[in-house]
Image (cartoon, rainbow, N blue to C red):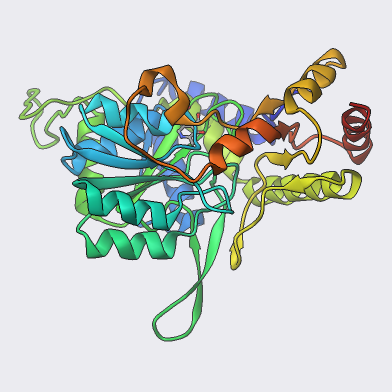
Length: 365
Ligand SMILES: Cc1ncc(COP(=O)(O)O)c(C=O)c1O
């Protein structure tokens, strides 16, 4: 079976897990959690990082720390439900925004939504390893006193070539621009810890608060279990953090391979692919295709018959039974993408021959 994006270990992970076992810190505390957080900070240039049990809990913490409850939160409709469930955990109302030609939140629709509602935060998903056009969204948020949270679950390693005020160019990683950003390390991500997440913020106070809330809000200066507010048990295990440290050592290698796989698909298939925003580097976590004349569900079936996994593009949130009647700002793009697109196998052990074979099956439909 060829899977969509299976785990790909570097070989170092098992050595680090052995170290964890030798130390006996088989617990949600330990040296590898610190090392994993440090490696994320070094790589992304985020000032603070908090390892958590998954990205969904990271987004929940971000909203909690920023005090976003019983409010309205804008989010792309073209995303995974993990971007949206945390909005509901705090009894907020999600407001769904359709996407631009780069498949990310459309800034003009967001502006309309901001004018008509009382939006307190924006959750901006960067999907399929690519990044949203964040600058105008950031500007809009700043002008309206709205918090920006980046859902970078799918886009660790994607970056902007950012023009600074002094005219110089700087690299800024996905997740490090809003008040908070979150990365996912679940089983099919660019890197995996089996399940896991890291919340980042350049604001030390906010990050400290997130860490506190992730550890049952146990006040750190007391040994006798003092709690002043509601907390959560959202910590990452030291065992899983050891896997994360091993994975981070090959992050650029994995991105290079994902991008190579994308180029192979482009070589073999005469179809349309997800565009890459100017002045950015995406990771091509998934190669996603939009068919000119094929039904993606038929292609998916044919691939499945050949033991090849593929998946539909995101089924828009505003079409979900859970969100019947929710406020939504549409331009038709997400529905169109869902009808025509497909995620293709993008695992980093794929060979060019395998990709060619997959493309031949697709072309036979
Ligand atoms: C866009 C997006 N947001 C959030 C999540 C949630 O991540 P996790 O599974 O680590 O909770 C995922 C992936 O699962 C995702 O793809």
